[in-house]
Image 1: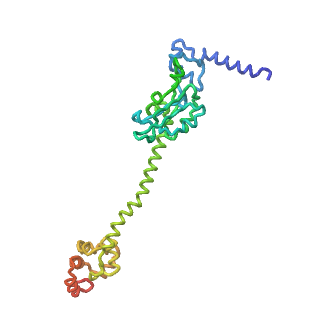
Image 2: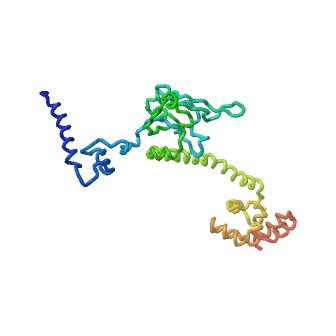
Image 3: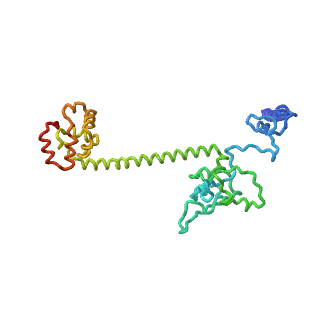
Length: 300
């Protein structure tokens, strides 16, 4: 209104013109040093905004994108790309072509035999990198490209597109760190799920010997002085057979009973139990019966 907008615009131009001489006009310092270049290119920079190209170049932002590239880890013969074709389908100008590799029997392999991008058509939208499920295609920052024949030299093949993952990490450190963290979290979740799934199987395998041992268990009540309650206590302590009972000392049996219920020692004396169990384990039932006839509650 009344030319106020024009006056404001001219005032901005005049302010930058004056700051070009006031802000950074220091004869004793190089006018186009790297220090002043960074100051000029900062968000709150003042003074000159031009650079002496190509001697000086602007710092490229991390999210800057120009041309697609294919990332590989370890060897270029095994890129991340699986030739799924998603990037070619989502590409707006349809500038991506992919040929899937095959094995010696003609069966398809999860890798490209050929990958081509027509950079004269590419609009650097980044859709291919955004939709790639394998983080195989990323956006390069190479933008100073001068060629003689654009129809041939701007038609990139697999050899020109492949770059190591370290190169991508250098260009986009934030994105790379986020992707690696997500990949580690996914791998950890997969390992935890596998361990959780394997736990019941381990439990079953551990329970199998126990069940087999219980199936082969002897009737400990045939030992003079052992009743149903004491037999249960011994079985809970892992003593299921006459041989196991014979291998346990009387003091050890007394400790088991004491830990289960101290009152049990008032009802039973395990002094002869190992010897009785030894006869039972050997199948000497007649000798055991004759000895048990002389015992009273397992006591001599």
